[in-house]
Length: 499
Image (cartoon, rainbow, N blue to C red):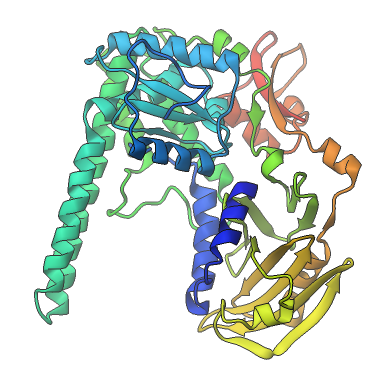
């Protein structure tokens, strides 16, 4: 939960989504947060101290600057690391020289986010998250991402998508005036959406093919693209809460193709250039550059450890109910129980100091609140209030808690509320407390450490040395590009997560 985003929300004082849509929003937010690392190397949103420098400057406009600030706010700001910047500079220079448009200029910003993502603006401004950098196993995989984003710029996909969006808006207005035939209206809109979605899928395939060609001509292993796409799919599987919607699943209106299809197309494109493992991967230099990179969330903006959320900067912690998977987003901490029958949201709101918390709960920001259920309570010495609300399919228990000058909300949703669910929700709120000075000082970020495999080391023994992560064996294999049956040998260099 980003403290800067918190301040913005407090200043805005927005009305919360009505109850019938709130549970869906809670679940959707949690799912989107959990699925944010699936294949999203799309053309989208550019300049900073940590940007790769090129002789021809990228032209800045007020619109670009606004988009730049929006992306930085959403992705934790700039991540500064001279070794990484040097690696990316060198890689991009090789890719530009080998591209169809060596006259174009690019500027790369490393984002301080554990998410796995990359973006490109049509001006040549590129973004890549440190989460993506940590996931990649060698420079050829990183080059596949950078060349893919360069391909979006070269092919002018962003400008084309903008035109498509304008056309869709026009079709929507025309269809709305077509008359009273709902079937005809729905069919027209569906055809428009399908055309746009198919076009977007073709853009991704085109960018993959162009990017593979650029990497190959730059003498990087062109199979880096298919390896990294596979890693992203595995990362999505590992990240998805169990028994919930598979984040890789896409219907035909999805704006991005399913990863397996992209892997096959990337492999086919690579075969046009070379056989597997005959080009440069540059693994050793890559591992040296990413040694000690921050892994996962930045503790300064709050972080999740299992079911516990800690925010050292704001000085508090709490623990979610048993069976919940938590995700920290820029807007809130969201969680979903295994099976999807319960959800929660934790955020900060602006409440005047003279307004009681009970009055706030009944002030209309949430519909269908049972005013008779409103009760003033004390949570670990902090003034608080609670109430219940009911929707068509969901029932809610809401808490507001005053911590210093801030008011925090716990919003719990359950398909079926019971004494047991109320107790688990109450236990979570009762776990809210101040962090001790020692806990704040100990809240260090997790980091990637590159080590040499010693005789007798195994995947299992090394994975158990990793700190702060779940499903250690699977995550170790993922981070090191190892499939389920691969082994390691002495003197191999591998990544582990340490605190």
